[in-house]
Image (cartoon, rainbow, N blue to C red; front, side, top):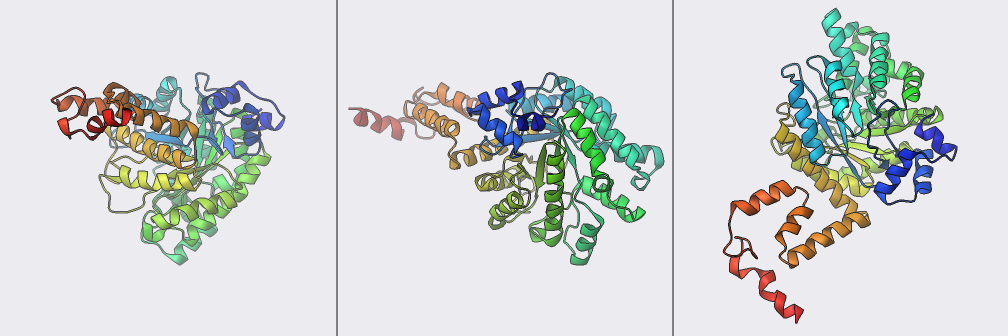
Length: 427
């Protein structure tokens, strides 16, 4: 049985106990939230070396790091280095978005090394297979698509992005409405191309029960993807985006009825003043299912700095109730991210998640900030560095500019405000 089914039966699993201990939450409260779908624990039965995490109501906000090859650059060793970097930077989950090289081999190599929950986007591998064998995505068959889903599930993938809400009616609404950037989701574009050419419904939507059967067998959490997410601020919160979300709300209930765990994916590019309303709409339409947001990016002009634009949006989304942030790297919109881009993306998203956790009253996050503040007052540089979100970078800065005294830094030197007044306030 899935974690959802077991939770409904009142059974507390070892996976639930592990997550409850990490989150400092009563395990029965956690079990009840898994049972009602407001918390998910992505834990494929075949991912035997998994260190599980929980995502959703009352838990700390989680951060995902995307890695994976492209058709222009496919080196397994580099992706494994990105995996290690993301883990070292304390990402909570990993997604393999590979579209180049031997995708199955890459995924299995990542899975072998990955103790975090691993996600994929099965339409990528299905599309690449179809193009290689038949010359074009238009020749994709539902059997090929679901064969890839099942293979990845058997391998041990914990959650999968499936763009079930990209329906023919949603595409027609999008066409009639018009957009600046049309469809920016790669998975959404693959499916839309196939649907429009073949004049057939999205296989993920038309055969949703088949998808649920596979997910239930292996306890794969379905991440219902936002194939029609806005790709620029001007397209945000439009009719096509909301129609897709309405469909995902309906499919969420079907998945729950089948005992399958569900996450809802969200936008994309959203103006700052619309972030909160987007989270509230999702929570209402999808009955509190965990919300997984890409960023969101709150401006379109930050090429090279999109990790910062993403962190701003992520903090606001987290405060509004988002549960899961997909990182964005400085390379977004420009190139395949490097190892260093991955590290910076994880750190930026973790800052956003931590800031939102504090705003939501998370005791562990609040205590962490208090600890580093006390270390600063004590001019305890080693403790400050150890408690920082990126100790390696903090230490590099400290060592790169030697102060006149070990007590201070070269910003203020002998005029250090804390040093000047510390003795007075302690007397």
